[in-house]
Image (cartoon, rainbow, N blue to C red; front, side, top):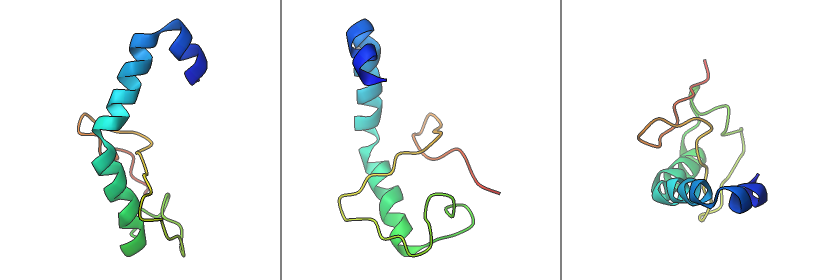
Length: 74
């Protein structure tokens, strides 16, 4: 996805990278949350026995304006 986007629409590519960069703290918190507490809401991306490295980032599959996970497993 990135090579064509960078070549054909650099402004959108920059916007996508800024979106991620601006939400790094939330991605870091989501990854560290897998190490401590697996609930029914986090079970889809925090598998039993999973231990994220201290520098891990887990961006949401779907995010709201806030950048937090909007997709909840039921």
